[in-house]
Amino acid sequence: MRARMKSWGGLWGSLSLMVALLVSGCGSSMSPSGPVLDAGTDAGTTDDAGVADAGTVDSGVPEALPCEKTQGVCAGAKRAWVDGAYEPVCTARSYGADYEASETRCDGLDNDCDGVTDPATWAEVAPMKWAPYARSVDSLPVEGGFLMVYVDSPEGIQVLRFDESLKLQGTSMIPLDPGFSPVTETQLVRTSRGPALYFTALHYQTGSTAEGRLVQLDEQGAPIGSPEGIVLFEQPKTQPAARVAASVDGQRISVVWSASISGVREVQGMLVDPSGLVLAPPRVLFQSGSPNLHSPRVMGMGDGNFLVTAYDEGETVDDTRIRLRRHDRELRLVGDERRLTVAFGAIPTLLMMPAKEGGEEPVMLYREPDGHNPRLHEVRHLFANGTPVTLTSTAWSQSSVLGATMTSRGLQLAWITMGYVPVPGQDSGFIYEGRLWGMSPSGVVTDWTPGPAPMPLHRNGEWVLMHELPGHWMGALLMTATTVPTEAYTLRSVRYCAP
Image 1 (cartoon, rainbow, N blue to C red):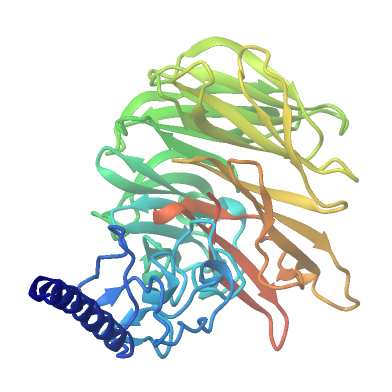
Image 2 (spheres, helix red, strand yellow):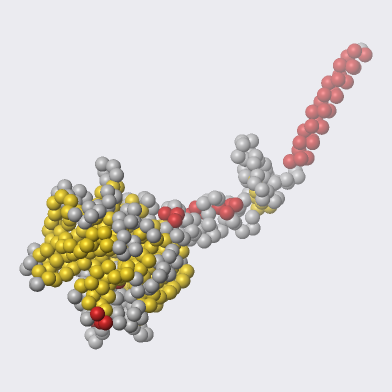
């Protein structure tokens, strides 16, 4: 009997212990202590701010409410548990690592959850006194940002300094001798000594002789030495078209300009070093009996040679050619000349681009204002019978002004489609409007115009300057113009995402 009671006593003790454990467990479940973390590694971690993965919530804790923002990277986000409570207003702790209160990333995501992915940012940079032509504006990457030059008065050449995000940092002016006429050409070039400014102007004190001059600059755009620079060439012509290009190593500068000798049209060229010392004296590069041999261009190539082009118009609009030649580092002709027949009004742009066979090759881009179907073309294998390939069409009845640059991600294009909008009694220079377009390396074409209405333009505003910015962003500079309330010209910038 005693043995049986001892057996029952042991059983009763075991049951009592189990009941106690159950009661204890039920009691703990009635005291809220925050979200229970998942057993996995991620669920069991917290950051320095005390934020934990919400995981699953016990019955005694209310479930996390949805966040205020519901678009973009914020879609489906719920409030994070921070320091023992859910966030009253959602932050990046709730929205995730891709969230930004103000979007700065070019990543194909709507980071600030406002329904707009990678928005473009427009800014008014500076007023202009008049509308400079395309040949009198230029820009160049420098340490910490970019320089831009343009001419909008007879007093001198305006110099603007931008940071790497294309925000204006300062302005200055390179003064000119009062004997100069308004400068007709400006260009920035990178030499082995640093940036340099080239300009062409008429000098009344020398009998209306046109001069091409080179001014060495520092990285802030200030002249090193005399702001009037060094005379590279003189030409008895009122407005010669002239361009320069540095070799890849920056030790040689090729200068080309149009000339007229005894009724024969020529393009002449020479080579100088960054100090202006003549390395190859002036010589004839192109010659034509046509009165319309003009608009020479030059580019330094990776092999040390120079590519020179000229626009040659025949007696009819159907007889229009772009002529191309290669010259070595002594300006001697290399190989044969190439003549490419184009539509009247085509404007060529030269770039060095990666070749499909490896290395780099010179490539020519040009716009073809072909009536109802203007197009942008690319020509590779320039001296191996390469033919034009259409990159994209542009708007009907509008001329497309092409800008192009080779970036770390590939070829980026930008162009202005400019239309004629006659207004009775209005100055003919202001009766234009248009839109800014861009094409990324993937071939995606985007309208970057700020708003649904076209931009008011001046007929001289047929230019757009492009640069690659950090973080996959692109930057462009262009000019708008208006007559309301008074005639005004404005330099504007746009920062846009084109990965």
